Image (cartoon, rainbow, N blue to C red):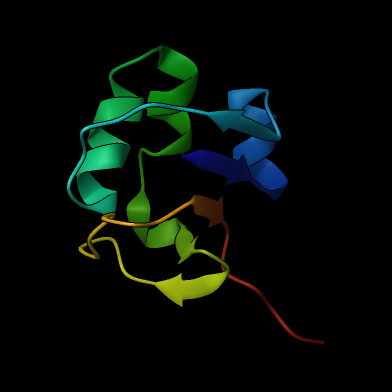
Length: 81
């Protein structure tokens, strides 16, 4: 599955995108798995209230299942102006 990082999430992790193999059932499980990799991932996912997630380009929740998902994107909340 492709994981895409935007804005400060990309800056903290140091990657714009990566392909991962995971057995995570939900987005939250994936976040736990990624956070355990290295400190940079743990820092990026330290405060989930400051993050949004999209599954196959549709806004979703962290408890959403990953079955059949091809792309997960993490990004900060969008602001208008």
